[in-house]
Image (cartoon, rainbow, N blue to C red):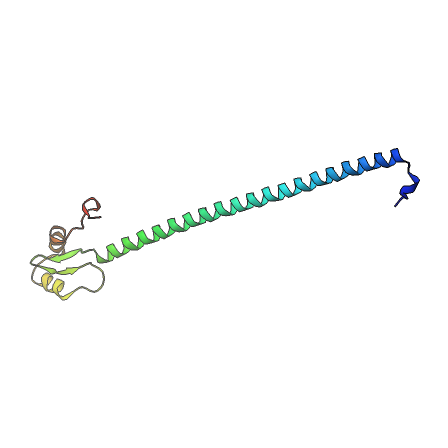
Length: 134
């Protein structure tokens, strides 16, 4: 470092002005870096929040689709395809082993088609959404 005693007063004053200007310049640069860092952090936080919202919406959509698929599968499993015309308690979905009452019906001359027609006409119908109580 140079010895300050070797400078005269006007040179010291000019040097002091240069130092003040340099300090102000560096403070401004530091503020700018800090502002950019804050903006970058805010942008990253916004991006992360948007991604989380998109992921949550996607997960909700998938869960809804899976629930709808499960409901359709349950409905298909429990859907009555065949019904005894004189006894509504005797039903069969057509899945799994054939019940004894179906064998008896067929042996006595009945047809599966007649059981399907009976199921279409006699099976309980679900209540439409528009008529369900809320």
